[in-house]
Amino acid sequence: MNSKIRQLAGALIALYVVLFAALNYWQVDRTEELASEPGNTRALIRQFDTPRGPIVTADGVVVARSVQAPGDSDVRFIRTYPTGDLFAHITGYYTFGLGSSQLEQTKSDVLAGDTFTQQVRALDDLFSRNTDDSGSLVLTMREDMQAVAKFLLGPREGSIVLM
Image 1 (cartoon, rainbow, N blue to C red):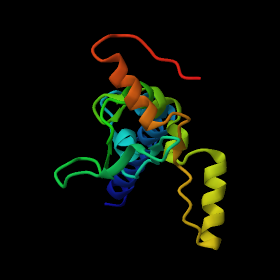
Image 2 (cartoon, one colour):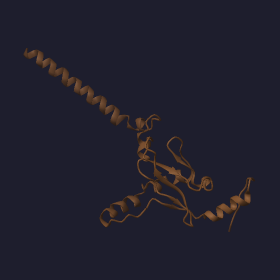
Image 3 (cartoon, rainbow, N blue to C red):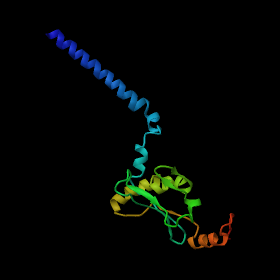
């Protein structure tokens, strides 16, 4: 009976070694490959769990903001664009299905609050109780001028330059 227990213990130890090797292979050796897998949406869903900062024009009009997603959604926050297509060529889009473009993509770290300065400021805010919205992005464009330019162009394609 003693030899049977020893054999069972040896088999269990061997199985634990195989299990440890397999976990090490999947979690350490193939981390990058698994993270970049198109079917792995965990990182993407995590980005939509916190609100992004607003994009605001020079005259204070909100061009893009995060709002609470509907209850049946997979994500907690979605981006809305109150001015419609007026600033679409500048702000771009930030969606779960299509990804991001334009400012939503190039300034994503600022809007998400992921820059080094914002992270250090967040640590300082823990002690000072400051609620500064450091993830906002202010454009040099004005909403009223953009609306006039859109009106003047009408159905034609082109651009208007104001100096």
